[in-house]
Length: 95
Image 1 (cartoon, one colour):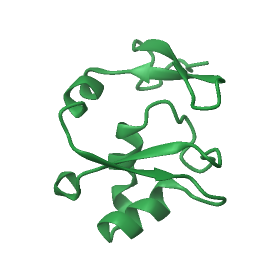
Image 2: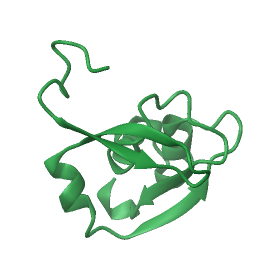
Image 3: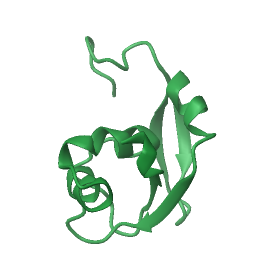
Image 4: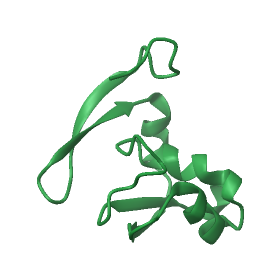
C-alpha cells in the first residue's frame, strides 16, 4: 500500500518475482530505467543487513544508503531486508 502524500503516490507499482519464487511489490520509477546502465556488484543479504550498514561497508558512508535503496526498489523497508535476498550494489562512482 502506498500512502497518500508519499513520494511514490503516483508511481507505477509492479510485481517482482524473487529467487525463491515468491513475489514482492515494487515501485517502478524513471530513475530505475536509467539505473539499468550502471554496473553492479551483487551481495546476498545476511541477518541484520540494512542499507545504511551496506553503504558504510561499500562506500564508507552510511548516509549513502539511498544509493543502494534506489537500485533495489523491490525492497520496501531498508531496515528489514529479507535474509537471502540478492542486493544490487551500484558502482561506487555513484556515491
